[in-house]
Length: 371
Image (cartoon, rainbow, N blue to C red; front, side, top):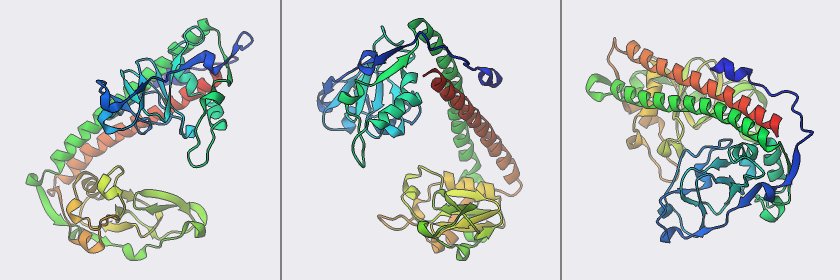
């Protein structure tokens, strides 16, 4: 399937019979208002629920989550983030519900554009760049409908639109299939992690007993004083820059020292690092000496470590607390088996994600060739 997708190309598109239309001829702006406190609708979608460069809505909220008038939406409409359009948020709605007032709700005019093609048109560079160009405001630039509705765009004839839409949706179906596989593999890994780190069958060890702390080699550098280079510069949540020089040059494990992510866990809190690296003072540095570095990393990213976090507004794991922290690892002789099982799942997830990136890149290229 990957080979088939990669071979799909559109060349020498003849636009001689294409026509230009104002945006208000292409789509309607739906302005039906709803009070979240007085509606029977059960779904709310805000801009925070939308992923950049995706026509799919993967997260949803409830009307009880928000206050103030919102916009009514219907299946087949498209929600478009009119605030900060450079984030490229536009997604197809497949439910009856309400949406953020910081968005536009668009409904394709089928006499001009095929509704199945419309979401892809909104994700074209031509439309997105125009949307950004006409946005007004400083910190939170916003699109004005009075300006957008007069913008003109070139569209292919209706008979060609259906064929193009069919191609793009076929590609999207392939991508979504891989996305589902990644979700299933992620659930499988969570299940395996519960088995691997089951305290009833694991050895309890202190972090200080299986590692050496190398925090004394860390050197923070202010952004204005960093010299651009190729060495990854790590902070609490991974790579934050690339610099010249290095503070460490060996296989190490980084553990977040501080930051909101210690509580929210939106990102990993443990990272394996090999080779030259520069570590600032927001990540603890461990040389793992008596355990699998990979399994220690997986434990920290899986386990609840909240009992060892101090501080209020700035959560922190101190060096002393990290050293005495107990963790649970597979018994000797079982480590290799556990690691192999988890690494195999990681490999499958990575392969799927790479496929998704390539397929999305091709799809985006085709959209921009068309529009």
